[in-house]
Image (tube, rainbow, N blue to C red; front, side, top):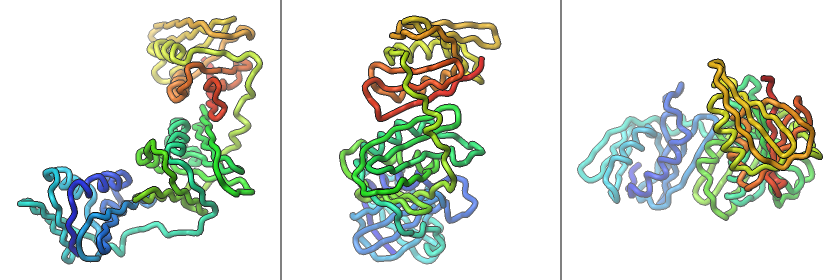
Length: 366
């Protein structure tokens, strides 16, 4: 197996595929990426057994064949070579020679037959969606995913297909983010799948703000997403996502309407003197006024006052300020609506004039 390729063609592809390859691996072959040369194309595959990425390059010249090479080393070599240089990779037995100009590197290979590829399974559902719409869904919800929670089904993002709607939901048990978009499908039944955290973060890294269609295929165990010359596959989390509809409060009859940026800045300032571990801030509501109070074990205190539109009863409620700030950071509208019915209820945060996204923050005792 031998092929020649431009550095500018190979480098971006190596950077993409290396994203899924973990530095510390139990199986040596998982530190490698697979290269398959066919006529005038080169296919690169990387996997960590949970997420698989395949990218195709059509600018390679050489003979057919396949092998696996150390992913990180090949990327570092390619990165260090001069711009616009030609790279020749010649595989002979268990060694591969990488040459460019007067530079020569010999890398160890492992057999391509041992590379653990994802087996294609029959799709339950297939649909197309604009890449920028899909990226926006993930961006607006993924921040609420749990990290290493014992409730493993929370360490990911729920994708729900219901009629002509695609919904993304994430929760870590303390806050929840939900967003949906219209979709052209012929589904009669609701389909729910949980994409693991790593898969979601990879998709966000790979997706671009482009107005072009991507193909999504969901099977029993995997989700596969394809666009132009990239093919992404992730295992799904086998578990039942909690009934998120039960924790979304109704929009109350005494909502708080606030300037998003002013509220965000006030809470950011108050949070400076909150307890570093619990990040608690006490919110006091009065007619057309919101006060944020924070204190810490060193007996230091912060108080912020903000004018808002509010015509409900006086109330005092505690929140983890980081969760409120995360939601306010994702929302892009100038005004936000907050609904709190009583001191023990969750707070519903909504972008004003936009019904597609909802954010819920649980109260905390202070």
